[in-house]
Length: 319
Ligand SMILES: [Fe+2]
Image 1: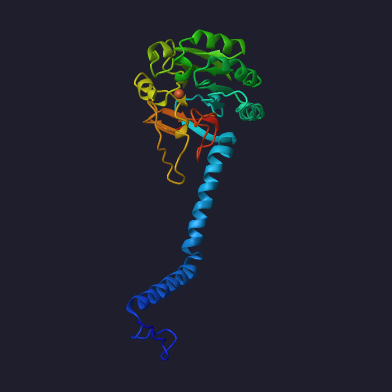
Image 2: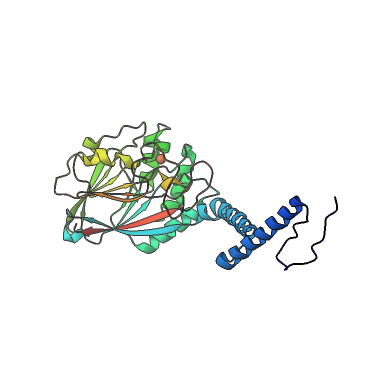
């Protein structure tokens, strides 16, 4: 069958003598061109360009997640308000570092950056909330060689994380931390006199398969003394606040999910004892909880929309 050439009619018309399949093809191509013209006019891109942008965006996100973000330290500054804080303690600044999961060779620069920032801040207290290791205790001495360069006016306090505690040698870790000049709390508290006011720093044992004991941890602290509690796993906040108001609990463990969906703040990956409180500030009555994203990574060295964090919290008097 011969195709008849359209001899007359306007440029946009199709001769009825043409083969129907050819006619359909020409019409579809014209509709596609018109759609793309509309898309270009309305949105400034075509489907092909959109696909190219998505591929480039995906490659950029992967590059960020695996190469850039795990080593990019951020500093978060927040005020924590509590009624039970004497005016003398208003303005007290606490630095929080957690979850190093230290890998010598890979993480030295990141930890050194955190230490340098802490030194510049001239903090009142420093809290280290566990998971210094991913199980291998041999990384503790090289990590402490970096951390011991930092100090705070009223001390550096540390607790165990589950990865540290699962090796069953808490006293070995305690000795190493104490040798570095840090206080190591396992179901214990330390009562300080800061600017003439009482302040208790309390630290529990790790929670996940550990032996946390809130009664022992808070023993001897008067009801009127404000408490800063260090507890590796954040969901233990509920157990701690069942005993008394905890003016500020500091926790890590979740890594903020390590990879989050930007804008909606959703973390697909959760972990035992970190499912209720994943990241950030939570308040209940006169109790506050701050969960940090931590410094290191566990498993694959990847972070996305969830960079390493040094948190600097300022205590404030008031509701
Ligand atoms: Fe942990």
